[in-house]
Length: 255
Image (cartoon, rainbow, N blue to C red):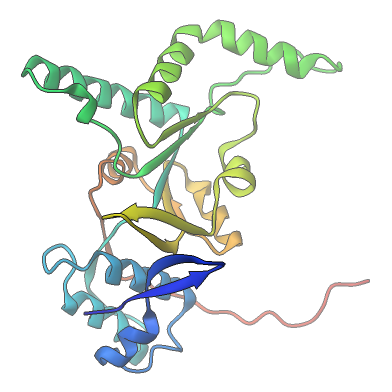
């Protein structure tokens, strides 16, 4: 389905995958499709390859409008992966093990990198040893850095060694707060065959609170560590076309 179009913004060209073009190409009127499903539909259009994503998958997504549900599995590729230290450290260990295996075969270990952007926020391991004073925050961070020195040295190495991998140090905030305030981009761009492509920011995260990011109109939810690692390595997340529940909020807040 030929839906790739070009948008000019201040003299810069961005390719994108047009839902309007998809509608004209045979999907019909999809203007009433829920916003969350429009994001997933764009994801399918962008990754259509005739194998993991087919035209049938795309038409199935559009057919949701008929009865409000579709019993079909699709392949979803998030723009990025959010991890916290409990699940993220084993993932980096796995990447390091892959590099070691590649090197043992006489190949270049630097070819092993996350294919999707990964942010690892260190927040779950921080403990409170000092409290009730102005210096408590700094003291707790200092103790944490000393207590888990080897872990942080390993993560610092990982950030320098791997492409598409960033570490947010302890004391910055909980991962969901950091995700909302610093990491989310709403619109993501990347170079594909020399062309800049713009697409919605989407993610999976290794924590049930990942869904907080939907407050910024960024589609995201929590998954297990194995699914997150698969997404990190460019593998699609297999999922049923989700149920969408609408609600109407009326009234107004008091002055």
